[in-house]
Amino acid sequence: MSITLYRKYRPQHFSDVIGQESVVRTFENALKLGRVGQSYLLTGPRGTGKTTLARLFAKAVNCAHRKGAEPCDTCEHCHQIEEGRSLDVIEIDAASHTGVDNIRELRDTIKLLPTTGSHKIYIIDEVHMLSTGAFNALLKTLEEPPAHVIFILATTEIHKVPATILSRCQRFDLSRLPIKSITEKLARITKAEKIQITPGAIGMIAEIAEGGMRDAESLLTQIASLTDSAIDETTVSVMFGSSETKNLVALATRLADGDLPEALRLIGTLSEDGKDLSVFAGSFLNFLRKLLLSSASPKESLPFLEDLAETHQLALIDLGSRFTPEKIVRMLEFFQTAKRDSKNATIPELPLEIAIVKTLSSDSDPLPKPAVSDLPTPSRPSPTRVTLPVTPPIPAVPDTPLMPTKNEERIIAPGQPIAAPAPQTIPETTTADFSLSEVKAAWKSIVEQAKILNASLALALMQSSPVEARNQTLVIQTKHNFHKERLDTPESKLTLGQAFAKILSFEPKFQIVLEKTSAPVPETATSDPSLVSQALEMLGGKIVPEQG
Image 1: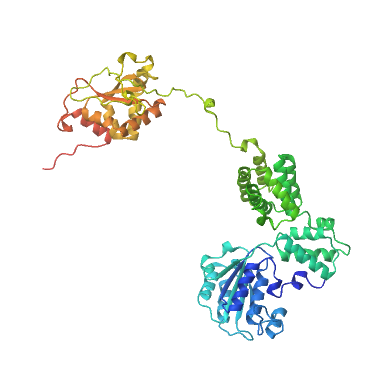
Image 2: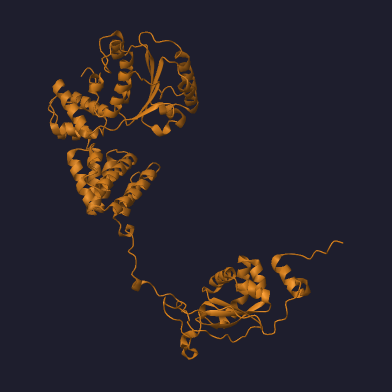
């Protein structure tokens, strides 16, 4: 075959372009209305028509006898474009012209006027390959281009193009072509070229191309050049192997069946066949996304399955009914990790094999929430609220009544009258679930722990001591009323509870009382030398004499 099919059958008119209707319509309207911009950016997978659309637009812009948006194909400019000798359309491969000097040279040439057409068009392919310096130089040109210059940038990796460049271009996203569209065009080509091929073989080539028309035409050129006999599915399978989608469906089916050995064997076969397992993992992630959409809503997912063959669409819809969305989300997490790890894995198969084992492992399933009856019994019983008042054994100093504790509250249903408590009905279960001796033995450690949490609180505790344990409540006796007020705050009780939890692994309730023979509070803290020394020790201070 003297010429590759994708060159011979490259679209020469906008009406020949398939699968990119929205982009074509926008270009046609711009040409018809005379609203041509000065910088465009085309992005999309390989072989979807980026360069073809750029050349068509350049051809139509400079056409002398344009009919609406379509070039006439008869003027000198159209002939030059078709033959690749136009001086007004400059194509630059950014992969081989990455430096800043190349862009500076371009900036010098854009000042020259076009030779035959109305515009000079610069098509920069794979623009993401430019260096940082080259991008900066291009940015200056895109900001203020001459009126006779149009830039058309093309890239397969839009995320690598700086935002400053994107903001100065009209962006068009090209999508993968549906299997049906590729199949129809390949059928027209084989008929025109008189290539004997079965419809099934055409479908396999279209599927292997993965949405790229150029790839499909290149594969057809290759297989037609290597055999004189009729081409069928077996011929395509022998030359190019099974389609990747077939392998994706096979792996998903084995996961649905819970067949671990066969799933692992499939990964081994792909590795032996020379498949890039990192690329396969990425393709499987895309397949799982479609599977998730199919599982969640089979009818609404059909537009997302157009790039699959009909048999694979049916297989995916069937698989979607066998997985729950939650299961698919878990699989996405596992295989996303596999995709990331496979790039640098010493054993290429290992990340995918781990993802498969995790998917099929029963350990990966979320544990059911235990029933209330199955919950383990805590080592200590939950505190019981006592609804009757209990008189403390250590009375307070006159004129300083004790604050009621939570144990002295009575639970009353709304709307019920408050009845007087009956002292004789005190239950026998009012003893605490901890001993006073246990607290006394650990009291020093508790004070040290409280010191770590709040040094000023520890100072009050050093003047206090535990005296009784009852009803899950610890009674703490202190010497001074200001210490009692300090310890009786909710914040102090919370801190004290944390100290108990750290040392003794339980949190009692607290009741703070004063000693019977507590001395009056002095007017100044300096009247109590022992208290001053303890404060200095706790807070790390020192006495400073007054300055005369």
